Each structure stands twice: as structure tokens, then as C-alpha cells.
Length: 142
Image (cartoon, rainbow, N blue to C red; front, side):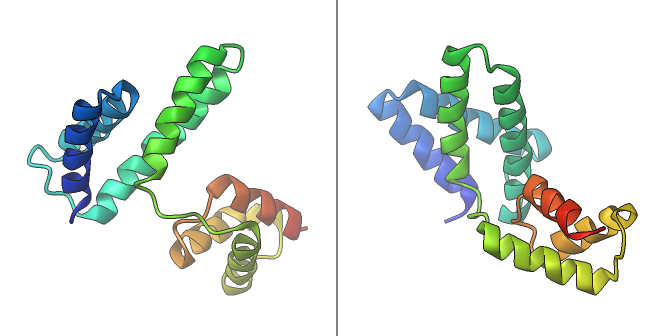
């Protein structure tokens, strides 16, 4: 079953169960897909990229709404729903191994070469959390 089919089923279930947050989030995800391809025939890999971008915007909105607990709570609920459709991110140890491998493969010696290392990291494993990877790169490179 493709992601778009899963989302359509989720929308039907959310309507039946009257779960408004889930319904609105799934509709938003579907609209993200349809904005890129009106037929909704994007490959799952492209859909995951769209969802990662949307998840990042939710995280950013959450960070900016720290003093509004009602908004933060709603954003956290949306983030949980979006996470259901994203591949599981590697743990800290797994991320550290990927970063070390990327540093070795790219031949980076200083922090000036962080960009090269980050590109290599994403080629090795694109499910890695970019912020965490950058933090690790900064720690490991002189």
C-alpha cells in the first residue's frame, strides 16, 4: 500500500472517529502531496521528503510558540501523526558511526569542510537528523 493510499484510509478513519486533529493533519499531508503532483502519483521516497520538510516546519513553529502552551500541544500532536509516515531516525550511537564514516570518506580535516561532510552523511544515510549530525561534526572536527 502506498503512502497516499494509507493517508486516504487514515482520513476516512479520522472522519468516522471524529478525531479532528488527526483529520486536519492527514488532510494537510495530502494537500502537500497534491500541491506537487495533482494526481497524487508521487513515489513514496518523494512523499517522505515532503513530509520531512513539513515536520521541520512544525518543529520550527513549536520552538517559536514556547510561550503558548495551547499551540505547542497542538503542534506536538501533529508532529506525532507526521512521524508515523517518516522512517525511524537512527539513534545517537548509529548517527555517530555515520558521522565518523562520512568524515573518513570525505577526508575532512577542519570545520571549514562541514558542508562536504554533511553531504556525505546524507548520501550514506538520509534518515539521520541533520541538526544532531551537524552537532556531532562540530564536536569531531577541530
